[in-house]
Length: 513
Image 1 (cartoon, one colour):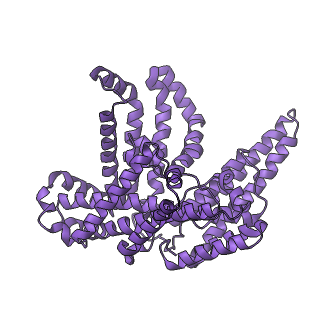
Image 2 (cartoon, rainbow, N blue to C red):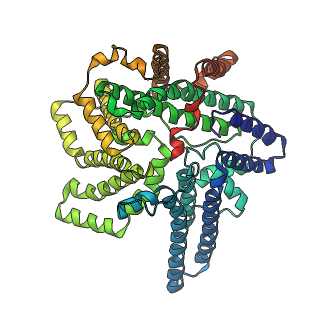
C-alpha cells in the first residue's frame, strides 16, 4: 500500500477519526490495528516475519528484564552468582539477536552468500522480502540491546510492543526509533489539537510534492537510461546520475516528511531523520544529516561495541606504544569507523556494488581521520580560513562530488556496470549531447525537465534559509491564517496538477531496504 495511493490516504483519514473518537486509554489499539492493516494489505504473505521478529525480541526483552531484576537483588559479596547471571544474560541477548538478525540474513543475504561460497544458485531460496524488514529488525534489536544494558525496563504488554515495532507511518523507511523516544507517545495519547493536524498536513503535503512532482518525474529518465546504460555516452550517464541524485534526495526526504506529518496528526513527534545533507561540508557530515537514525544506530550499537571490545583495545595499546602520537591514538577509532560505514553499505543490499559503496565511504572517512592533522597543517600554511564563505562553498561542492560518485554504485545493477558508467562519464563526456535532442528521448519532455529543475531550486532555496536558521513553522504562524493554509493548498494544487501518477509511484526507494 504505497503512501501515495488513495487506499493509504483513506486508511490515514479513517485512523485519525477513530483515534480521536474513542477513549484516550484505548487509542493505541487504533494505531496497532491500522499498522497491521497497512502491513497485511501491502504484503500479507510476509506478515509472519514481522510477527516472528516481534515475538522473539519481546520474549528476549522480558527474560532480560527478569535477569536484570535478579542481579539487583543479589548481594555484591556473591560474585559467583552475579557472574553466572551476567553470563546467562549475555547468552539470552545473543540468542535473541541471532534469531532476529538470522531472519534478516535469510531474507536478504542468504542467496548472495550461497553464490559466493558455492559459485552457483543451487542453494538459493525464493523468498518474498517483507516491507521494511531492515527497519523493523534494527528497531526491535535496538530495544533488546537497551534492555540488556539496563537503559529501560522491558515492555510487559506484547500488543503495545507490537505497535512499537510496526507503527505504520515509519515501518517502510524509518526513522529507526528508540523505545524510550517512541513507546510512551504511542500509548499515552494526547487530546485533539488542530495545530497538530494542520502542521501534519503541511509536512505531508510538502513530502508528497517532493515525491510525486520531482522524484517520480526524474525517475522516468533515470529508469530509461539504466535500462540500457551501454547505449549512452558519458554525458547522458552524467545526466542520469544527476537526475538520480535529485530523485533519491526528494524521494527519501519526501517520504520522511510524509511519515513525520502523519505521525504529527496523531500528536506523535518522530525523531529527525533528514537534515539538509545537500549542505554537508564533509562526507562524515553528510552521514550525520542523511538517514540520521541509521547512523546513530550504528554508532551506539556497533561502533561503541567494537571500540570497547578486547581486540580493538589490544590494538589500541599496541599502536599507542609502537607508533605513538596522534596516529597511534586514532588507528583503533579509524578501524571501527571503517567497519561502521562498511556495514552501512551492506545494509543497503547484498551485492558487490553495495559492498563497494560501503568501502568507498569508509575509506574516505577513515583516511580523513588519519590525515586530519596533516590536512590542518596544510590549510594553516596556505592561509585557508575554515570560517570563510568561499571555503565553505568549496567543502560543500567537494562533498557533493564524493557523494555523486558513490551514487553510481547504489543505482547501477552491478558493480562492473557502475565502474563502466563512471569511466565513461569522465572519458566520453560531450556537452553537445545536452543540446542535440538526446535528452528529450529519455521519456521526459522539455516541460518536465524544467519542472524538475525549477522545483529542485525551490527546495534548495527553502533548505538554504532553514540552514541559515529560519524556522518555517514559526514564520508561517507570524504571517497568519492565509499563509498557513497556503502552505497546504499550494503544494496540494501543484501536486495534483503536476504530480506523476502511475507506475513510478509504487514504492519509495528506501522501501526495498
